[in-house]
Length: 133
Image (cartoon, rainbow, N blue to C red; front, side, top):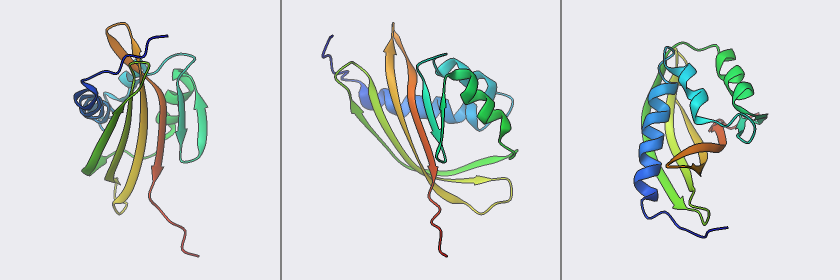
């Protein structure tokens, strides 16, 4: 077990977020996201629904009903190095889907080293919508 902090964690975090959203926000490119997840050891929690494995994660993405995504603003990308060489990323931003009003969202990624690259081991997405009943 190595305890190797990756000194490039901030650049890795920003680069991953840029690449991930470029693929996610383009319906023609979205199927390529499967390559960012592991077949078995990737987890995603999407609005409280937990999924495991690249296939289940992609099934969820394919079930989403919106066509157009406007990622209005990415307010912050905060990254931290992890002792296994991975990177923890927290994203805060605003997103608009189709004609819905824009909503704040947060997304957390944990990148795990895989050879010279990384895969997304954990992904948690939540819109910043508060029930005001």
